[in-house]
Image 1 (cartoon, protein in one colour):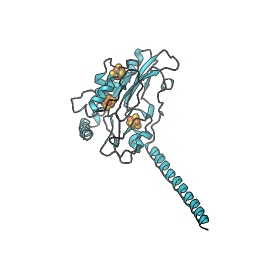
Image 2: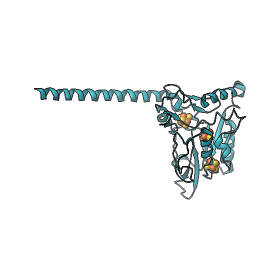
Image 3: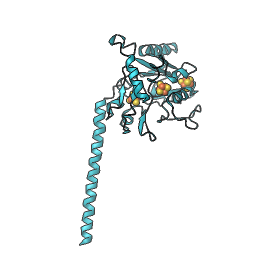
Image 4: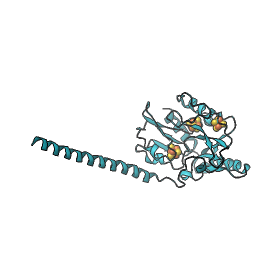
Length: 275
Ligand code: SF4
Ligand code: SF4
Ligand code: SF4
């Protein structure tokens, strides 16, 4: 219910028409060079979204994975080319501009809101996990308790309802490693920080997966940091759907063939035994 109520409220924010479309499109930035790995963002996300805290996951430097109860993780990054350099990466949904997850959802439970957030309507989700397969970052995770897939919402239920408060994780960061603003301001701020550091850092999200509303400043290219390298082009949603459906159809055809062959074989054996 929280999700549905929030969705309509967020929709109201963007009702000013094309003129303020740019102004009402939001983005979030994570700066891995500034992050100190304190994981306050993870705790704040859990508090706001009422998510279960697992033992040990909030300890600094303890590697954690996204789960249906962990919508954001902060993990240590080691630069392969310079192993003495350590950075922390805040990783959550990238809020893709053309999200592959939404494209493959067979019941249209995932929506890209005009303001930026990609949200799953848990009342519609049937837990098929196609979104997990399609997502280049493997973000949506299945909850065995709720039987639905869950992920970061960009706090769309918080921003408009509570007078434009920042997402819970951004508000909790003590060192300004997280930043939230209109999308064009987020890009401007990312470029400003990169320039300030001599231009060697890498901005992830400008082109990855066709562009995302979550931008991450990395000390160097993602491939040198063992960070997922998403394809630069937009993941073709319909192609993905066809691929998944085709895989399903082929899988069923193979299964049916195997079952048919097995039945024919056992039938032959049975008739020989009865002779
Ligand atoms: S990162 Fe994955 S879950 Fe998030 S919007 Fe993109 S495709 Fe969807
Ligand atoms: S934006 Fe909101 S839902 Fe997403 S990681 Fe931050 S606190 Fe969690
Ligand atoms: S709260 Fe800020 S500094 Fe702490 S782990 Fe999260 S992003 Fe890093």
